Amino acid sequence: MSMIRDLRAVVRPSSRVSLRKDTSTSYDATRAPGTPSAVVDCAVYRDGARVQSPGPLSPQEAMRLVRRDGGFVWIGLHEPTEAEFAGIAGEFGLHPLAVEDAVQAHQRPKLERYDDSLFTVFKTIHYVEHDRLTANSEVVETGEVMCFTGRDFFITVRHGGQGSLRALRHRLQDDPELLAKGPSAVLHAIADHVVDGYIAVADAVQDDIDEVETEVFSPGRRGGVSRGVDSARIYQLKREVLEFKRAVAPLLRPMQLLSERPMRLIDPDIQKYFRDVADHLARVQEQVLGFDELLNSILQANLAQASVAQNEDMRKITAWAAIIAVPTMVCGVYGMNFQYMPELHWRYGYPVIMGITAALCLGIHRSLKRNGWL
Image 1 (spheres, rainbow, N blue to C red):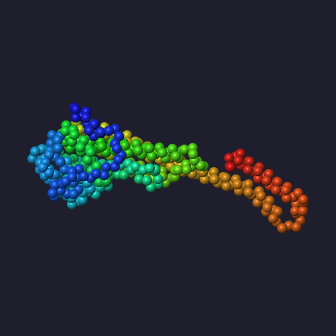
Image 2 (cartoon, rainbow, N blue to C red):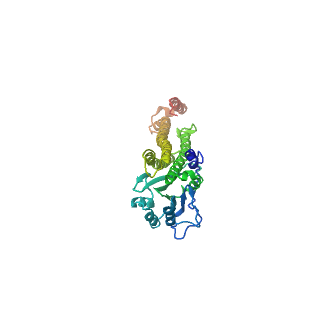
Image 3 (spheres, one colour):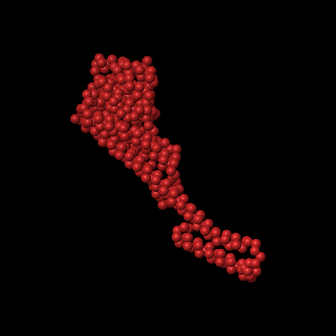
């Protein structure tokens, strides 16, 4: 029961996941001779503790130890090629379709069940820090973690420069009682780690959306259009939210299956905690859907403000054109070359005409300004 109580503390060391990018792709400083270069770490765990060995283990050596003495092997790989992964896939009897997906990457989050293993795909999300959101800003960066869960093995295949599981492995190794539950405990820890990352990124994206929303509806704008916001910035943020949505939405069903449907590869004590992961994931999904709808509204409001500003500019142009039309008409009349025009020979003709013209222009100006055209 103490393992169950401490489960969240192990996989969630803090309430907010750091957004700082971890580009580490190496766990052990050295690798066993002949070990594929894509292998980041390979270890055997027995009774919740990492089995110490004289040197780095190859996947084949680790599996021989497990088959002889029990326990399970956890192998971590980073962007393996087909040739690098072929030997491991053959050693553990992985399904060819799952192996193909793991090597090629760019997969949709999913859960697939094969005879002796589960294949799970997670999309990791990293928030890209930026001083100011622009039309070309990258807000979220995605990666992938693919997990093969078997009775006595757990294999992770990671793609992308972020989403390292190094710290998570250390935390799990510090809790032998949890690791004693086997590969399903590792699967839950990774799922919870990924979803916690979603929560942190959602909070950061919310700040960006709040900033854009404030600028769009701020009082310091000319003609109803915010001076610091354009539609391209809002559209770019909407594209980044769509990328976030593609990572979150498809994962909800696999987490529900892991929490609701009994599976022989998932320890019953661990399975109930997938429900907590599914609940958090559902909350993040609601946030992301809300982001999408809110950005639609902000974009429409910004476009409406631009349209209103254009209409106001056109009204001002039309108003000034109406005022200028009066002296233009007078000048046009008196510019005609007629010989008999009484005002031409009248001593006060010029000041009277100029006064009438000025009075008409002033009257039109006051009328238009009173009606909001100027």
